[in-house]
Length: 419
Length: 75
Image 1: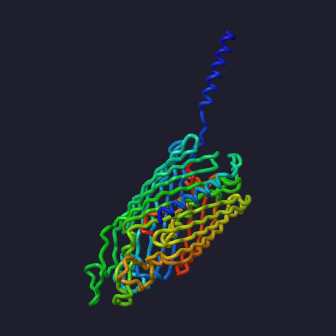
Image 2: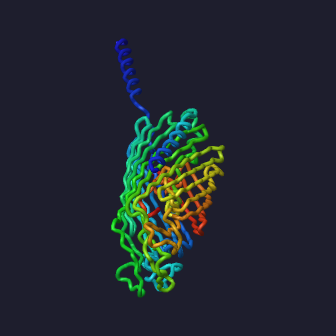
Image 3: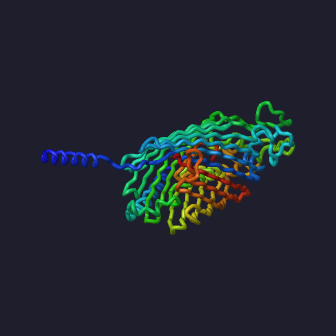
């Protein structure tokens, strides 16, 4: 009997042990559902509106509420859904038709017509699956965006591999956006417009309204020391289709000028090549200086086949004031050369094949100063229904461009964890 | 021209990646500083709005671990 018990105990413990070795402990990729509510308020003003050919008010305000929900489907899979709205009011867009308001038409005065306001709606989904050893992440994404004159559908995939005891990560991403314009041309170029005597142009509507973007992205992250880690990014982007913005006016130096009130009637709309190749390379390096201060830095070199070369340098210094509060001063410097097709108001020649007076494609530099504040509650004590508040982020940034454009943005974010 | 730029960029990234990869291996239990929220190699979520207006107001975009282009009537 005793022999039998010994054998039974031995066998049971053997199988129990075997079962234990078969069980692999897996930490969930995402422990609980996370909900982010983000919002920003953006304002800008300047005097080089592209809609009015490089002169006129650029006044614009934009409010963008956004929800992001990250949902763990099981131990290995996460589904992330994002829905955002951008409601903007733009003085320059209002001047697509400057004659539909109650005021005299002028590039310096906002028209009160239908094109003064618009809403951009965006929805995107990302699915990712992480392998049992947590060294491979495979995913796919889908996005849809729509506004009055533009529609976009995008899709793609991504693969990440971690090596070297998770000290090294290599990620490859491929994305395609199949977009289409619903072009809004300047009012005076429409067929029914009551134009002044003698006003004629060589303007023709665009016949191809699609815009496709294909991108291949490579990123490499590496832990350098116990306190330093860095990433390298390389994107190869090819665009084709209607890359011009159909409502941006052009004025030629070699054609007669016609006015209604003080508004210069367009000679044409912006014409840009139907292909563009972009090549940005970026690097990010973070340094944990001490338990209070971290240095976050970023640099990017950008070049494209429209003749633009740009440099971006960004530095952020998060300082932990207490366990819960972190303040982050930021500074960003940006400089770009002009596109080959850019020239200012009324300086292009009608004989040129391509032309734009969009100052976003001109030569300029910009400075951006900001300050961020983060509140963190790791215990998520404050609850709204079943959602525990984990972090609050607030940030203000001020942006000035060497051509006179000024902008400021206030952003806020609330992160909740579902209990 | 286009191909040369891609080749040169790819080569640069590979050289830098090789140099970075030659560093010492940091064990999981030694990553306490690297796991700090401020050490993340991705941009903070609220920065997406700033990135968005910069994409409209500037010609350059991409190479930041996020979207590389497309999906908007921007530059």
